[in-house]
Length: 328
Image (tube, rainbow, N blue to C red; front, side, top):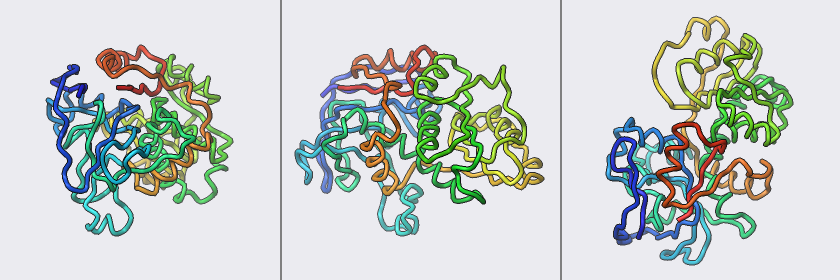
């Protein structure tokens, strides 16, 4: 089969490779669409020691089962491979499984014509949901998990809050679209890239450049940092009102200082959210199938053999697309 390999820092290339044999309890999926994630870009830069080249990256995918119990079924997948018996798994918090592994990290991922994955990771798709939309399940579930986790910490319904989302990449855009779907009436989206601001606005969202139009201090009851850098963390702490909640979803760096004095004096809840549970993924399939998040014109589709150019365009900020999907 053909696959896009990460071969070293800022290097990906197409290769011919052998399909892996199926292990017990596994299925083989013919990939129909797969997304480039921010974590794939992090690995591409050589910043993720967990992803060791040569490796087939990719973990946002949809396709058709060609070997396994769901033969012939259209599926998306949970890329987190869990043990099913640790305390976290038994509590329904599978995203925190103490023994988890992951496609595109500890085993070959979805930037290929096919992949093998444990059958229990597969989620059947309705006939009305396209492969391209279904490939957004994983990042959308990440956003949904963060939104739901923050909502339970607010003293009043989320729809009543003034909400700031920082970053209009895929997670930020999806977070904003989910918030709009949940009835948030006062929603602002901060993004420095003018192409992404234009994309967000075409999706019906209000976007601004925080470098030239700094948001007011103490103005938002909820802030989602979907970038995760020292400046965005500082912005989140400055903008959150006393008693508000910050959700830290981005993982771009771990630099700088966090103003814990302001967090304490303003009695702010500072939360993190990691990936999703199986329940989040299933709820997301229903959400995408209902078209509740609107049309997906902000998604760009390219061929798998155009993957190197896609990585370069994302790194250089040359594409307005919040998400690039690759089709083998």
